[in-house]
Image 1 (tube, rainbow, N blue to C red):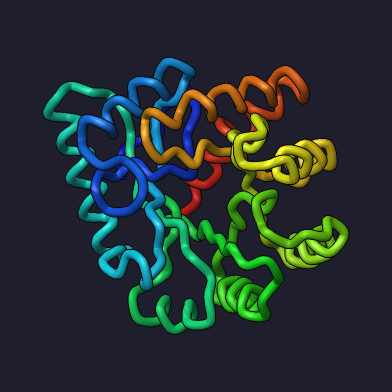
Image 2 (cartoon, rainbow, N blue to C red; image 1 turned 180 degrees about the vertical axis):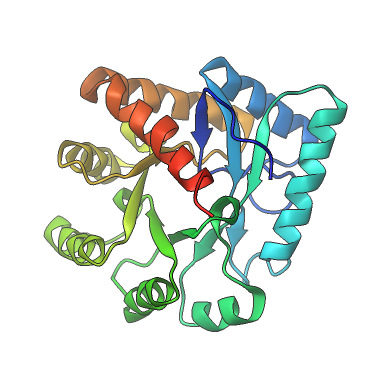
Length: 246
């Protein structure tokens, strides 16, 4: 693992690795993304490609570790000072527990934290089952971008979020949802969840350099509407808690 940079932001949700999912397609796109992130104070990224066997069957923790090491070596060869750690964005489904038993749990930066997501327009039983299994195994689940979950009734979504956070699941919001580009409901929900202090982390969920400016705009909107402190806590302080956790 690379040393933790003494200063700077850490992006905990990023599709930085080139050519393996719907994120960056080439090393040049990865470098362009890093250059943009460095301009706003980022000094490292946890690489979290989709772990979704139906779409990306080769994406396993072992392969992602190898790909992250390869990208880090290419950055070093080009004299680019930027830290990378391995991770994954784990798609929750009916088979996810068996998949983890076979391939291993895709933790963030070899910690006990696990980034997860799902996209259904309801709250399937397997979501709670996966969280309960991870917690029982000693892992710390994080649910990515709950503001984007397709449950139409906000009260129903909040009921489920309250239930999982009471059991210890953490929530991570996406900066771009602040801009309205992900939809009106997502725009409203991220602001409500920020007001209610529901997020433990905020992240770029970066895919390609041409999509980064809107995410950077979203970060500035959080600063303007909710203050610099919440951005610093969720992009500097708490990511370092993850990196420092064995």
